[in-house]
Length: 272
Image (tube, rainbow, N blue to C red; front, side, top):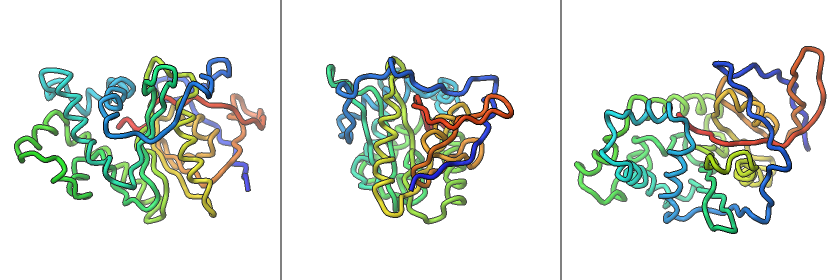
């Protein structure tokens, strides 16, 4: 049964940034121009390119400081590809890509962990031992350390570990879909691609009886986006969805409570 969530007034984002706005219908790509499918490991270089292009520069400056970066961007990208490659062999990690059919180009990506996966973000360096992936790197200890050498581990692993602690406190061992990240390449943003990537997992979650919970972390500026999709804020950055919901339109002023569903625009989720 579809349920109506409580009306929640969304405060302005920090630093006066606006809330993410709905995608205008005339801006959406035709559905015939987009395919949503599971990625293959050969897609990783393009996926990593999108992560670097779509997550905020200040996030990368914190997690991969200039002083730690390798001499070329090509080496930096290749190291990230190597860190993510083992996850493609793990059945509870689902890599989903949006492709522009006329060009065959990947224009967006989402990574989900499926119900039953332990609460341990696979982006963390500790995930290598946690999931037993060390042998898949097929390299010496010195080369392994080099793959991670450009990362500020206090910020990178520390930030993801704190997020995992919050998720564990909220959901415990309850099976759920977890959105590790979602992005659309900057030149394709505002075209409805992110919503299609989100819908892939929503369809999976809502197909079970009872429906499977969904959880994600996102910037405060995207609160309205996820509330329109049935997610309920659990804090400043944390959102939980327990099935279909009609979320009433956000109040712009006191006393105005228009019940309304709206299309949304989702661009980048998961930056630490």
